[in-house]
Amino acid sequence: MSVAQSSSWTSFLKSIALFNGDLLSLTAPPFILSPTSLCEYSQYWAEHPELLVSPASLNISDEASNSEKSAMAEKRLIAVLKWFISTLRSQYCSRSESMGTEKKPLNPFLGEVFVGKWTGAATGDENAGETVLVSEQVSHHPPVTAYAVLNDKNGVKLQGYNGIKSWISATSINVQQFGHAILEVGPESFLITLPPLHIEGLITASPFVELEGTSYIQSSSGYIAKLDFSGRGYFSGKKNTFKARVFPDLLSSQNKESAICTIAGQWLGKSYITKGGSTPKKTDILFYDAHSPATHLKVKPIEEQHQLESRKAWAKVADAIAKSDYDLIHKEKSLIENSQREMRKKEEESGIPWKARWFDEVDYEQGPDHDAFLNLCNLALLSIKNAPSGTAKKAKHDTGSAKHWRFNREKWDGESEIKV
Ligand SMILES: CCC(=O)OC[C@H](C)CC[C@H]1O[C@H]2C[C@H]3[C@@H]4CC=C5C[C@@H](O)CC[C@]5(C)[C@H]4CC[C@]3(C)[C@H]2[C@@H]1C
Image (cartoon, rainbow, N blue to C red; front, top):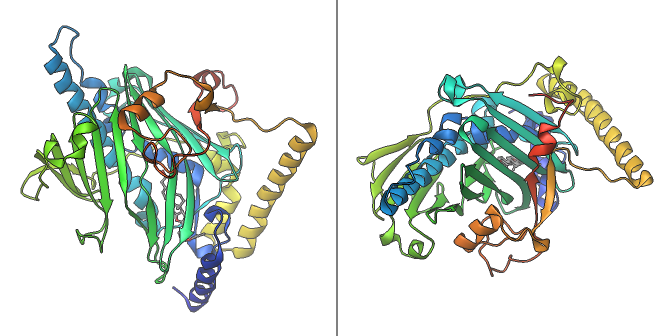
């Protein structure tokens, strides 16, 4: 880093030490800016599309015995666990790998969208059918991105949304994730909760993400996976470490000895699996190797994109960032921010508030009373409120509204201006 950069970084660190607001609205030194909008991060849920659709092929005839059906449900949960682990490297390390350190994403404007697709071939084979990503910035203050990943041919639908709250500790930025993902595979559904994270390496101006805490994957079949994350300095001593245990149901998950299997290792590298509750070693069976290359989705050329699509909307800012032209970055960002302020003002005056294009905000306090999300939260005894992701029912944070963003397939099917 140059001397100029280091002095701006030091003053930047001082500035964030005082902030307690929206991390994404903070002005960061240009060299830490990413040319990619946060709205694009939804693609990281499906950069191994073949793993996303894999549970769909793990089914058994209705005539099978209950124990055979249960064994297949267990296999599907383990397949979903492998897919979830496969998303983590893209989600949390793709900037470090492509640009050297974690970067600050562009802060999406309200109504910004990002769409793309993985072909059948990318999803495993020609017959796998294409996998489509739909992502929309459904809130700007605070930033919330909603997304859906659809593979109709396999009857696989992932939907979810993400928001963050962050605060500073002595040496790192702590981030609590809000929202969750719901995966539907035919008649079965899975709830996936999002782990807290922190950004290390700030002092040396080489920020990177480390996951912590716990994620749950709850299946409507009852099977549940519990993933505990840790990093360097934790008991394991290695960075990007996790341990996951699979149980037949929540009750049995209270006792690690009743685990069906345990997977442990590095979510950025290799993980291993053993039967039961003991921790696997490198000599055990390899479960997943995160070094397998990600499959990036196809996005239309910018000239064919709608002005709401991320890469078109931010093209001039991304160029300015690539040139490290600080004044131009500021000028082009201000143009976008000012036109957004104008639009909000007009909506205010006309009394017609902005509405999301492909997502609805569903209030679970007003019903629906039967719904995959409610069922899965009840099986996992998790809060249905807008609490930090993975909050238990009756825990301190189990308060507030129960409004969650849900994909509206009819609105997407009726879309006439924005094509994948
Ligand atoms: C303004 C503070 C600043 O720029 O500090 C510089 C550093 C780059 C650290 C702050 C930024 O770090 C980025 C990491 C981003 C998260 C990465 C991955 C995900 C997963 C995805 O599924 C949802 C979004 C999420 C949680 C990103 C949220 C935004 C984060 C924390 C960026 C920070 C502004």
